[in-house]
Length: 296
Image 1 (tube, rainbow, N blue to C red):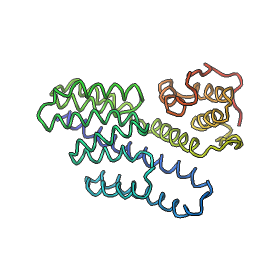
Image 2: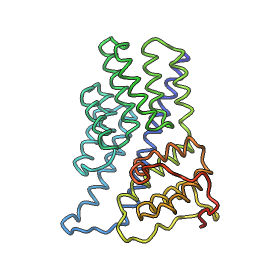
Image 3: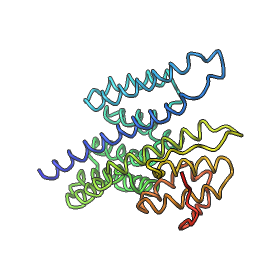
């Protein structure tokens, strides 16, 4: 009984976290792209279609949370029709197909998400959950052990702070009749469902995507926003990203050195694994500290 209660609490928190991440990412990127002028006259209707596509995604998340999975799938299909390039759609399709028991479609969508480097850590863990549910439906849970745990490890390597791989691992142990390791994995997942960390991670990742999307050669440096004379951590990440896009690695290093001293090491390392920094800071060299910290 206690294991079921713990599982139910965790499942609700993970679902809520996924919804919050999707909501914040959509709105931060939308806020940035809304400032960009429409270049092609024939594409005048495109911004409205993109806005409607995001609205359909929000409706899909609400329907899925309420257990109306086919309705959610329909909303996602309308979102894709309105904006086929909308990031993260494959991951949402995978989650919804899984709820409907469409294992092949769910796996295809999850792997496509990984290939596109969208929601990569979550999608990697999700392939493990899909394998588990397929095996459970066939009455052969133990046969999926290697595939599930391999997917879990890939996801943990990609994003050490995500609760998703620990949740998937816990689900496997519970299904295999191993309550002690299941509870341990559930607790590790709960430890990672932090409101503060979730907001920082979602804000930074959405902001990095927007900066990459909207950067133009020759544009002036990004003006960071200070609060009471201090740059919030996400602003320091944005400053570093903008400096890297301008080819200024020295300034980027100063920003990253400053934020390193302000965040827990695990959170900083997880954010530095974002694909943006993997692309533009491949050697991962960041000063341990900075005597010349950026000033507002």
